[in-house]
Length: 284
Image (tube, rainbow, N blue to C red; front, side, top):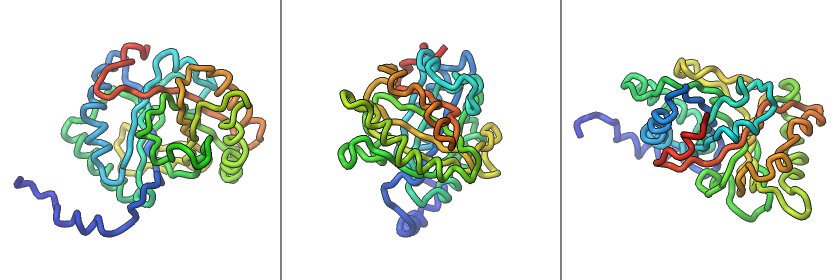
């Protein structure tokens, strides 16, 4: 191969810096393909972008795509959301883990590769980024303690569903307090569930968004709520439609009652089936 890839520095780079397995950072991106482009978008994302624009990049070690069919979209709340307008917008969700301590290196690569993909006409334009942000890991709360998969397994384990929850603190000075309440009180209680049947969620990961670089692609808007927001991912062992109201109803009321923040989105998803167009015909 004649092309210069500077491969001589790869071994040098591998010998320095963190290389643990913790998901210190995440990319969480919720996207709405434009009407009439659902199939083409799905094929582009799975057949090209998921790999060339994500998984092939350094320090991004796990990824998974999720989808909200129309019936799942209609379960979302609150109706007036600061994240999605309307609240049903964003039928595809992609989640990726980035190695702890490698955010800066990954960001340099991802900006560079997306410039190249855009220049080469390999970026699908008929889509809207509803909620896209790189995020720093703050906490993981487990239902079963030390048993079961860890958070670094979460995107590889065959979970049957995921719930995206976005919470805004009542001001930047309250976010640390909100995080501590979530970690030590609210989430352990919710994960425990009623005595006769535990929660279908095996774990909840909590992240806080980081600002996107100034040289990001123009079609991705700057992250909102950097100083106040927390993003929760609930990993489910059951379909989220099963006892939705019992299991996930009222999260907004509980957060509001704490006086620490407000819920801006609770949205259920199920995993896509890679290499297929399953569920694409059920989005509208």
